[in-house]
Length: 275
Image (tube, rainbow, N blue to C red; front, side, top):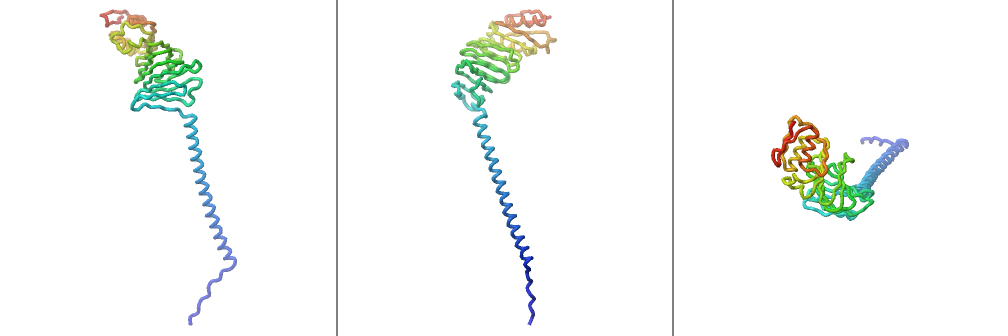
């Protein structure tokens, strides 16, 4: 008969060691589980804080943005002013509106009907210009570099953002135009702004500030419906003149005076500046 081998005997010390290892393993797994749970809760907390921050920013600080995508839209601002935003235009209104000043930023065209307030000027920022009113009806048009303000009621003040000393005040039925370049500023009767062929006799307030003469002549020809020939060597020179209640010939005389030129009138709409 085959003799069986004795089963190995576990000592008390070895048995305790096994149990210690077992409990260590259990404690380690519990610790890892707590760590994972803590990380999950931390991530959730961070996400909640971010969400609360976004909601707070949108509610307290984020500006209101209006976009007229397919049609004109009417916007009633908190001060009861109305803005008719033209198709393709964008209006940005800060959350602080209305505060000491009622500031909005316009991209494109819009008609404004501003509620009157002597203490809180309404300021429209757009295309490098600032249009300031207390209460009136006016329209701003912007296309490329062209900036126009048509005034229907009240009074407005227009100035370039970077040249606060140059201010232009409009009265009803007057239009401010930069004629497509920031170096030019003109105030004219609104009825004449779209009729270059009959504007030659119109009286305008106009200012050329360090404007390249090539640009100035081109703008004068286009807006007054006239032709001006001038010496080629003047190309590259800058023009700085101011005309109050000036007609086309007044402006031509001012140019001739600045560059010491003579004026020769070829016909009713053609002028030649010569040495």
